[in-house]
Length: 337
Image 1: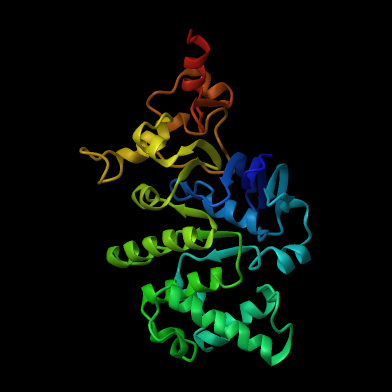
Image 2: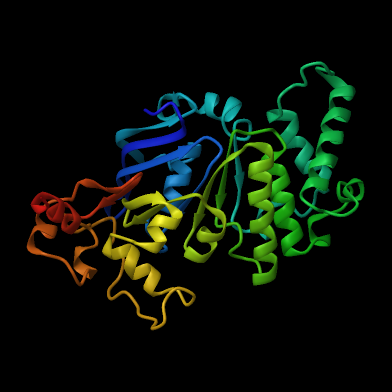
């Protein structure tokens, strides 16, 4: 594993037992997030993005089987840690999480201060030269939380703590989620499509806020989205997933300017801001219960060759830090002088 990487996923393969059979939900996933960078994970609904997030956080269903691979965070393989270790010193403490829906994430019957201070009570690091317990520590946490609420641009942060979730708009609730995610000084924040439920104007404000906070606080971020426009605005690197597999990864400007995988090109052709003539992708994402052999995108790919259905492709370097998992690119590299 690379020392510069805060999070590196290598050859992750997992399945889930269901009433209909075994679902191969992730298949040889590769991902690398360097310290201080923002990595976007993009793909259609059903491509495995949310399952990947759950695997990192260690909240997979009990019926899940890890068949191979590692998830190395800050030098530790998270797959080797117990639930107690993950809950006690990883989730909330070193890895913060911003959920997709700010309307469902907060308990409507408790004040904001009660909910966010409870998170800090269990996960915030103790001050190096301040109180270690009791009422003095709670006052310390409260003062820090007020400062964070001010950083996320919520007016009158002292009053915010005494209010209930229904007294805030969607954008304000998402700012509360961001505050909760960074309150315990994590090294990594995972944002699972945090702007999906917001209007366009508010979405832009939240993206700018996330980017400024990540750089200001030195936080690495894993940003999950189905929208290439959002990824382009926020992220430094991108990993494109399809049907549980990593198909392309690299610097966001490189991948979006010159995508190599047919799936990445097809997704960009569906984006109204990046394609003059909108086109769809024929077919559907295959069921993880019955994934096709070889390349999983082959049945929907207009450029597929016979070899695509026979065996899975290998990762090929298409440029500096630009990797493509495609049999066509692999074949072209084999015949190149």
